[in-house]
Length: 402
Image (tube, rainbow, N blue to C red; front, side, top):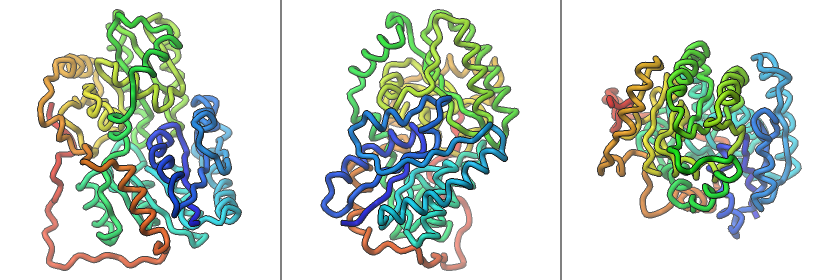
């Protein structure tokens, strides 16, 4: 049996990876070793390791990465100390390949430990852009360390190939977030969530998810201040704030949100909703506001309009139901009003992250089963035949003009 280490570093990637892990656990070709790391062990971010414990999935090992403080030096020290622990875990588990998702710093360390151990990496969600965060450098680095790639749409597949990855190793699987959004039973989770948080179901619900924009931290603080000023006007709404990620600057963002919610009976802050309850809230919400990728992938799949604030998601494909704001209070208010009037059309259904007849998790598992024995860290660089038209081949605009 080929042993595949699956790395989860946050509540977000665990929710996306869960359908893949469950299908792999039923495989006769691959044995799964789930490794929990990153913010799963951070009390400030909800100790989401508990979600793994209660999921029914087997956990192979834990690699805690908890910085002593929110400074760059402490983040770097915590990440550096984890490198050898990943390599030791792969050796102990007799790992054949490592599966990672996204662009978190702990994902890059886990991938680096894999290739220096001679173990090939499989990467999900390469080729994307988030110009307002340092994620691009991490995501593209992981792509170059990886031997098999799964992208969320065809534009992203082309970008990975543009980085020199052989076309037959880059598969457009569709977005796991879209799969989770359309395949879950959200009604039951919402009924439990509203009881847990004492939410008045007679009022409209707004979900707010805001993270640091690591490439422009001052801008993200200003954006949040403007957003909170606008939300003061929504006294007759339920305002549900989900927790921040563990990027540098997250504690300052969290502190401002906690101060805001502590003074308002209609506002709730939950450090970690978990994937299923978060999706339940999105399915119930009239609108989602903030700067999370979930507003661009999961929310449109659930037919919930989004106001995307600031630069954090800059460069990422923005579906028609997403209304972009540069971050001033008047503009945020204007875009919220526009989003609440959004009229759904066929364009919203063909929104770029949609999936076909085969689910992304099925495509991913099938390809891993078929290729795990042939994967290697040694790979060639795919060169284009020149001359080549260097004009953009993107089929989707990076930002819409709503």
